[in-house]
Length: 227
Ligand code: AMP
Image (tube, rainbow, N blue to C red; front, side, top):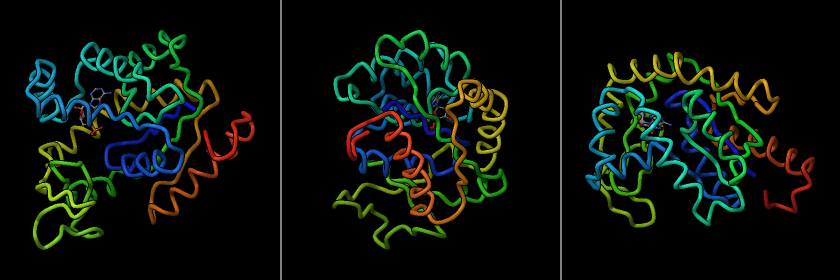
């Protein structure tokens, strides 16, 4: 199944996306992670994307679309995938339609809904592992006393993302409202958007998501636990 997890920055869609990949055995494709990897590796794409990302602006479509299409053409995406952070503009949604014959038919959009005030609070306290990308939070999941990531012996350094600074968060939310929110209507017209209340225990939010996905899998006659 081809799934989009949609929502403003800080809505928890990254966390939910990882839980979905683990339960259903499909890969997660996060354009934010792909771009950050390019920045870290110092590629041409990374050099171009960096200034947009640090300012909380969207990276231009032409840079993101090619990178994304190359990723979903890889064999592990053959049984489906979950998209986190793509499409973020109408142009990107149209690019998916143009590649429908190559397996880019979106079947469900999970729309994770969180108010702006809650988002600013969440992102200001967010910390991430520079190595594996795991999320921590000063209130809900404090950084271990060592200051190093304790997930599966990772020991990566835990940092504040440049784009989680308060003024950048405001810019990211503005970009979301102006350029990304219309993507929800694009899929709304196709009748495949499911609203998910994104406040509360991540496990409870995940239960709502699995209920949507399992019902859909049944109606689309996917086999067993495999979507
Ligand atoms: P994320 O981790 O998904 O919040 O993405 C971090 C940053 O990467 C965003 O603020 C954008 O600058 C950039 N980015 C990620 N995905 C996209 C996309 N689909 N289109 C444009 N820019 C993106």
